[in-house]
Each structure stands twice: as structure tokens, then as C-alpha cells.
Image (cartoon, rainbow over all chains, first blue to last red; front, side):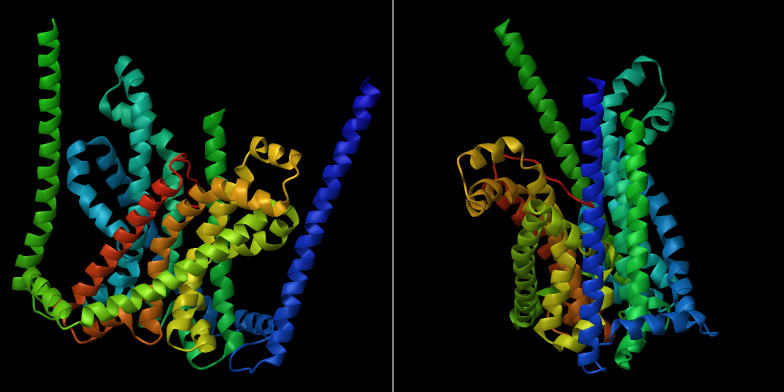
Length: 268
Length: 272
């Protein structure tokens, strides 16, 4: 009996292993094919419009070694508005969400604004804010806040309402005060919703900060993109694109991991 | 007994009506406060920073009457709708293939996920070099922002089409095409629509960015033109139209979702 089970188990394991190998092979082959097409297309086309991948990699490497560090400075400049803006947006967004989720008056007052701003394409506000705030870092920080705050607050509000409906009565029956209820029960249980909101908000913030840098076009990764593309330096132009893609994927992966581990903790 | 029950029900209904009316009053008051602040703020700040609210209303009327606004809106909407249509067709197709064929998913999946997480507006300069300055790059950037939620949602829809739907079809020797058309397509419509709902907002961002940085046409073009000439009263007009368009299109998709798939409320907002 056990011997048969063992054989079946081994066969199953071998099958899974083969599928895994298949998968890795396919992913690697597709990637190599992608790079090959890029390389050939780059060599065949006018260097003003496209660059082969080997040139892009070389330029990327050179700009990392560059003693003036334009690329790294650009990255630091972008991060230096993205991070503080995003922290402020998260804190304010959660506070707004709690207010709207727990108080009917708060909800009725704030909901019209949240609906309007949630539907406003945030990049459309850049020209207006440019007039009001000027071209410096404060502009970008404000724009990051505006881009990220509404997904965070809407998700927090939805979470608080869902969670409140489940947990308010049991906690009340054990004589919990409002602050105990909020701190010990509702906020921890809302955390998965907040993380989902932060994920969405960070994506929006990244897009919006790039557009703002296109406008101001002297600093950050967006500025480098604008400068290199308007002078037709194709190989150089792809370096910030690669960094931005890597940033997006890293943020997304990190938050998805956080989301999953939080959810797993609540399930068990 | 019955009268007291009727009384209680009537009292309940009255109380509910009261709460409803009070909530509406609070919301109206809250929004009215914004416009009041805008009006008063506009009176006391230099016009190059903020014009009072009634000036924007007048500007809205004037731009509607001379046709500027209509032309710009038509221009923007045609780009947006073209981009969204392309996104729905190709997004649903890619999602379908990814869900049905594991190997295809392995090939394409990493790029779809990667580009979904990338701020694709970064590709606008190169798109503009390749496709020129007019509708081409704008439609392309709308597609690059709008297609990924549709792909991901369709994919999620296809892989959740249960075996209980597929097995009978297979046992009756349905061809792959018949399965796709008769079993999977109806089952994934709600998912495609849920993806489209997310795509509308992203598409509008792409549209505006495209109109800012390639040839300045449409509502985004109007916005930049008025902003750079400090005509703040006019500047709010395209912003208002864009907000209304976003809200209207999203509501339309929700309505369509209910009409096309009334049997199912499931929606999976991947990466909400």
C-alpha cells in the first residue's frame, strides 16, 4: 500500500518538476527572443528613433559609473519628492478614511469631494498647481499627495465599513470604548484594505510625478527622459525607463507580498 | 394590533425620510461651501491665480457658444474612445489566450505584469518620436495605460470559469472555438467590464498627458493654453469637462455591466 502511494507520489513530484522546468525554459526562451528582436530592430532602424539593446545596456552601465551621476541624481530627486509625499498621503488618507467610515456626518461632508477628486484625472491639476505653487519640489510633493490620498482613503473607508458591520456589536457587548474598538479591533482588521489602497496610490503617484517632471523638465527621471528624447539620444533615453519599470515592479511585488502575508495571518 | 403595526411602519418610514433629507442637506451644504469659498477667494486674489466661480460659469457658457469646447471635447473623446475600443478588443483577446493556454501565459505574463506596474507615461517621448504628434501617440498612450486592467481581469475571469461549465461542453465534443464563443465569452463579460471600469480613469490620464506633451489638441491642449496665458476662469472649464467625462463614462460602464451580465455581480478588480 505504502509502496504504491510512494510511487504515485514520486510520479506526481516528477510531473511537477517537469512542469517547472518547462516554465523556466519558456520564460527564458521568450526573453532571449525578445532581446534578439530588439537588438535586430535596433540595428536596422535609424539611430535617431531606436537603439539596439546592447547600446542601451552599455549606456545604462556608463551612466551608473558616470562621476557626475546624472542618472542616480535623477533617481534621488524623484525619490525625494515621492517618499515624503507618499508618507503624508498615506497618513492623511487613512485619517480621512477613518473619519468617513466611522462618522455619518464626516461621510456626508467629505464624500462629495472624494467622489469629485477620485474622478479627476490628477494630471489635469498640474497646470493649475504650477500657477499656485511654482516649479519647485513643493509642487511635486503636493501632486504626489493629491494622486495618492484618494485611493488610500476610499479603500480605508470601505474597509472600516465592512469591518465595523462585523465587529462592532461583539466588541460593544464586552464594554469596549470607542477608542478601544477603533485601536484594537477595527484598525488592525482594516489593514489589508489599507495596503490595497496604498498599492493603488503608489502606482498613481509614480505616474503623476513623472508627468510633473515632464512639465518642469529640469530634474528627476522625468526630466532626464524629456532631455534625452528631445535630443534624440535613444540609448540614453531607455535608462530612466528601465529604472522606472524596475521601481514599479519592485513596489508592486513588495506590496503584493505584504498583502498576501497579512491576509494569510487573518485567515488562520 | 394592525393599526399599531401600521403606525410603527409609518413612523419608521418617516424617520428614514428624515435621515435621507438631512444627509442630502449636509452634502449640498458641503459642496456649496466649496463654491462659496471659490467665489470669495477669487474676489480677493489676483486674477492670474484664481478667478471667482461665476467667471468660470460665464467662460463655460462662452466657450460652449463659440464651439471651442465642443470641438475640443469631440477631439478628446474620439481619441479616448478609439484607445478604449482597441484596449477592450486586444485586452480581452490576450486575457482569453493567457487563460486558456498555460504556455502562452508563461510567455506573455511577465511582460503584462511588468508593464502594468510600470508608469507607462514614461514611454510617451519615444511614442511621439515613432508615431508623430497627432492622434497616433495619443491613442497609443491611452492603450498602454488602459489595456492592462482588461487583460488581467479577463484572465482572472477565464481561469475561474469552473470545470462544471467546461466539462459538459467538452463531453459534447464542442470545438475550442465553440467553447470560447458559447461558454467562456458569456462567463467573462462581467470580468471584462470590471476591467474596463478601471481602464476609463487610466485612459483619461493617458489622454490628458498625450494632449499636454504632443500636439496640444483637445481638452488637455485647451487646459495648457489657458494655464500658460494665465486665463484662470477659462482654465477650469476643460478640467470640469474631464471630471464629468470620467464620471459619466464610468457610470456608463457600470450600467452596461448590469445590462450585459445581470446574472452576475462578481467583479475582480485586479490591482484595485
